[in-house]
Length: 504
Image (cartoon, rainbow, N blue to C red; front, side, top):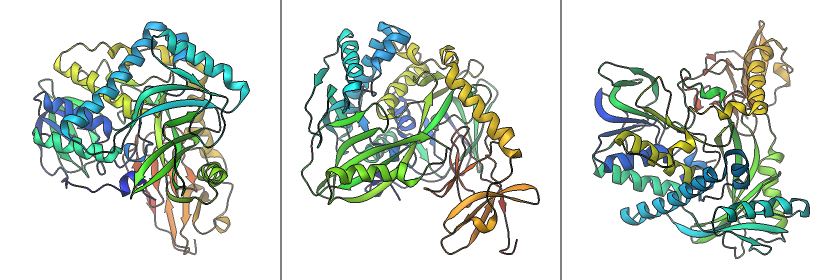
């Protein structure tokens, strides 16, 4: 099912696929909120900008977010102070507060109608045992000079033990915002191409790059990789420094008057709340059900737990939309923003926004626009992609290496645990045919779809996702539909498809 954001957006512009070779100052790979914000700032600075998008505007992570614009990234500042120091934490908070101002300024100056609302943001707990953690976060944020507030009462339909409140945060409709950016980019001679999958980035002569798609090539002085998960494996090796997390959202008509504010708790099971205007009604968005992308999960632990939470407080509610999203998370929980690699001058990246991309994408776009234009950005040091500190997170690094080793090598030698006849209609699994692993999906009508279940990114064995009917990579989060079409990076190639007859 489409997200509410995608379903409620009137596409005001039709974008073409790149069909001929062109030249530009900056080529941006990806038309989500980060890529388009980069294009917005750079086009306003007078640069010729080309944006290449594999699918359509904002169809992936940006179109499947909760769309909270906030510097309150769960309980984060006590962690930042302890791990990076008080100045680092203060600058991180200041950068995010500045990003909220920047987004509002863009909306006001471009007159973008995107349902922008200032809201208070809360991280709460319902457990006395977690109250001390909330109070530590309050003390940490206050030590940075930011006016947060500890509260024990909120608008939520249940009692809490306590919460930390950030005032003057915001929420909006992300797709309406993106189309407003597109209009402004076009008015400044920027070019946006959809249905244009980038297959390669290579160094050319005279300090320029060639960005190749299936049909044509863009030659540019600078390149920005804004493709959610960096797909250039070497150099950079982001596949060793990040993992992807999947989370779920439902939009609910509660048939009751709703509260103001944005809310999230900090321990499992995590629930995120905000409201949204839709067809004259206030709907409630509930998010949660997080798990590492590629790890099998069931309906009850994902959408089911969200629906159960909704019906607990609104028994007569109606679920109108269900959707999910993937977020890149770095080993130290801080995004990678800046030069892609020291060996790739003038190629830039922004990734690892850890579920808070609405705000962090604006920070990233400003940092990279400043780097391209030769300006100093006071927040750039916070997010340097070449920092070594993430590697010090040995536990998570070990988890990534173990998962990659298992999926790349060990799992391929394990016998399939299901036979063809055991696969139910509208479900899938990996089976063995002639000593080779084959991914089988049977449609509700019993039609068979067979793929080679090996990720086209780095060769990990895929797992079947019975909720979305997709093949997911447990190593780096790539996804493919049951027909083998690539849906999510870092892979960009489709799966090999087998043509089986029903008697095989």
